[in-house]
Length: 117
Image 1 (cartoon, rainbow, N blue to C red):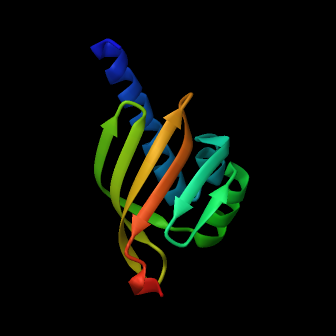
Image 2: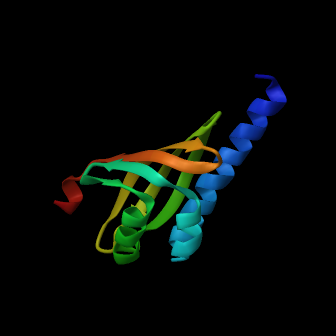
């Protein structure tokens, strides 16, 4: 892959993920859903979700807010360090997003769950 194609893929992947996070923060769940593959997979410390519609329905209830601290991009993978405001608690976390066809295909989020248990 030449350098310009790699940079374009990285740029597009970053835009998709940041659009997704900003849409969640704005509670614009329609836009957030549009950034997800229909059959996307989510893995987190507290559980898993398979399917974009299931994931978005959960996000509508939880209404988490994300404060991005750092973005790393490697081709079609994006890693974010962020604070997730979960209402009563704010947790420092890492999210690892895989992009395919300019949509989020899968992601996983890791954090220390002790403050919310």
